[in-house]
Image (cartoon, rainbow, N blue to C red; front, side):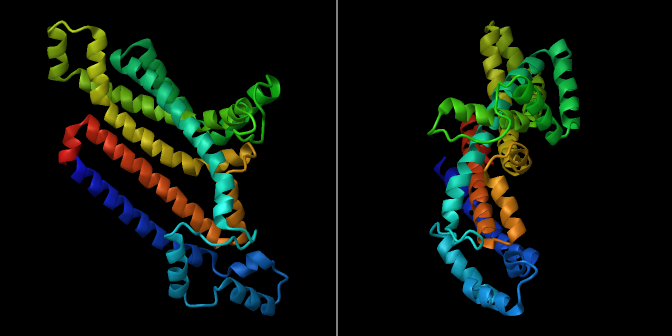
Length: 313
C-alpha cells in the first residue's frame, strides 16, 4: 500500500508541475500585452512602457517564469496587477465561497445520487428505475443557467425561503451561510445527482448478476447483508464519477456564481481575465489544480482500500 501511495503522490506532483508550466506560458500568449487592459485604450505608449517596467514584464519570458515559479513553489503567487494586493489575500477571500458551494453540491450529489442509484439498481425495470432514467434525460437537457433562474423565482422570490443573491460568511451566521449557498449548490448538484445515480445503478445491476452474489443468497444471507456486499463492489465506479463531478463543479461554479452574485473564484477569474491580471489567473489555476490532484489522490487511495486489485494494477 505504501508503494501504491508514493506512486500516486509522485504522479500528482508531475501533473501539477506540467499544468503549472503550461498555464504560465498560455496565459502570456492568450493575454498578450496586459498593459492595454490595465491602463485602457487611452494610455500613451510611454505609460505602457513605464507599466511594463514596473510589473517586470519587459524582461525575457524565461526569466519571468523562473522568478514567478520559485516564489509560487513556496506558496507566494505575487501581487495582483489590478488590485495591488497579494494574490494570496484575494484567494483567501474568494476561495471559501466557491469551496462551500462546490462541497455542498458534491454532498447533495453523493447522498441523493447514491440513494436513487441503489434503489434503481436493485430493482431494474421497476417504476423507480424508469423514473431515474427519465429524470436523467430531462436534467441533462435543461441548461444550468435556466435551472438557476427557476430556483431563484420559486424558492427565493415566491416562497422567500432562501436569498436570491449574495453570500454570508459562516463565521457571521451558520444558518445564514447555509441558506446563502443552498440554491447555488442545488443548481450545481442536479447534473451530479444524475451522473452518480446512473453510474451506480448500472454498476449495481452488473454486480448483482455476478456469481458471488448468487452464492451469498443461496447461503441464506439477509437481503441487507447481500446489498452491503453489492454496494461495496459497485461503489468504485460511483466514487470515480463523484470525484470527476467535484472537478467539473469547480469550473461550472463560474456561471452559478454570476447568477447568484457570489463573490467566489468564478467572479475573480472573470475580473482577472478582463483586466489581464496574470498573477491572479495563475494563482487560481495552480490552486485549482492542487485541489484536483488532492481529490484524485484521495480517490486512488480510497479505491485501493476498497478494491485490492487497484493496488496491484
